[in-house]
Image (cartoon, rainbow, N blue to C red):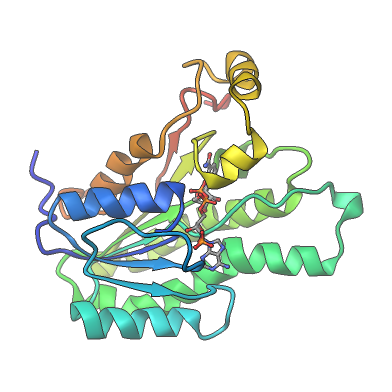
Length: 245
Ligand SMILES: NC(=O)c1ccc[n+]([C@@H]2O[C@H](COP(=O)([O-])OP(=O)(O)OC[C@H]3O[C@@H](n4cnc5c(N)ncnc54)[C@H](OP(=O)(O)O)[C@@H]3O)[C@@H](O)[C@H]2O)c1
């Protein structure tokens, strides 16, 4: 199926990490012109991207810088994939405002600012599409990760709200909710094969962690002009892990 991505102008944040990098690479493979945003210069973004930028998305002016770069390098934006983020460990009793502020800045507010900055460009596209990286823990919160649970629930609610408010502009907004997918942060939490296998056999019906390349096709479809009638959805990519109907 041709997703109509040839020449499409795509911004991917978190493109120097597991899921974002796989998504950016998949867009490149389909002929899209990708602006890849990472933070750490030591973490590469995929080959073949049209442009790349390194910045800390929790900085108040980062979203503006990204969008200005997209205008300069791509001439606009058709698709935005917000994949930067990460789990924040800690039980509620142990956390102070500093942890909450930093965790919500990264997992929610940076995405809010990016959406605000990108909206004029998405309105200028003939088929604006947005894909936000949420998490299974938004709908099935994990004990010991309260900050990222709350932040990702906010991301899911943001996607739904924007899908309604931006529908008249033809902008479709969806979220993807991974369960346990191998990436830098997941490999920190589950460093060895035995720990992953033990967890997967108990909690994941398909019996294994996912690969970032298994998330990418979903983001590609949702972020493509071929998607014309799916908006406001959160699509789980979790090997069957979600327990809710
Ligand atoms: N992997 C999973 O199973 C899973 C499950 C649920 C949700 N998710 C979500 O999926 C997304 C991707 O996660 P991942 O597992 O691929 O993680 P990852 O491998 O750790 O990659 C995280 C990415 O986010 C970037 N990033 C982190 N903090 C940043 C900041 N302050 N400013 C700019 N960029 C920043 C990193 O940039 P640098 O590396 O350059 O610092 C990296 O590109 C996240 O939103 C995560 O919450 C993943």
